Length: 314
Image (spheres, rainbow, N blue to C red):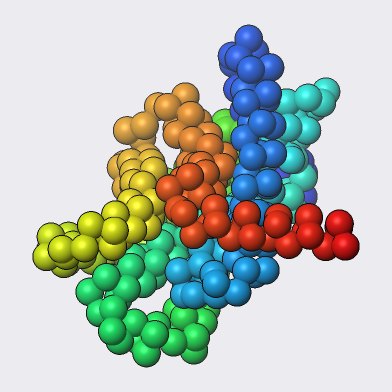
């Protein structure tokens, strides 16, 4: 059998949900709606955090980065997915597949680290309130975000280079709606123990280690909150921490279930719907979770809209 990688210059076929054609119109409609919500919600958070000086704090600096990540992540996936669902073909160029695979890994890994950074920010705000501005100074915040971005970039380069070098023996069909690692590995005609070990090791670094740090942070935060006597401050802490914890649960829950299990233990249909949830639905929920539970963001939006109305009248 020829195991060369000669198919590297041809298009791939994204099968998506072609085995369930009756669901495709529903899925495409839902995906389109969630994409619009993602664009509007995350863009709003970025603009409000930038325009309102009262939100020039570490928490909203990190939240703006999270929103930017979600915008880039969904944009690397959804337009191509909708083109395939609405168009006559389901193809994606080899270069497009490589870019989609790379950006999905890069941005997903970066978000794992960024959520851990945000948990540390909440820990410093609740447990070290008097020293918070000193601890979370702008230089440290920028370095933490840069580390998250560089960490995601490094992991994506490693996994992409290993996965794309697997021999495919002419296989062109990707049994998913995007070029994602599990589907691309299943296209290979050889088994790679190196990739399995590498993915598991990176999973420990980018999934288990951050979620462990997040849980430890919230354990300490819980102890601190129990000692707070001010009901107003208690509710404010619960709102901000609750928003972050909800996002963490949605994101890490599905990602860990998807990637930390043996690849052959998840059915392909289950994998597609899990991917649909964390790649498309979760990014649209993040801004809703933060804005609906956060009075600071609501107040900032009202202040900005009030200024705009006043300017228009004058």
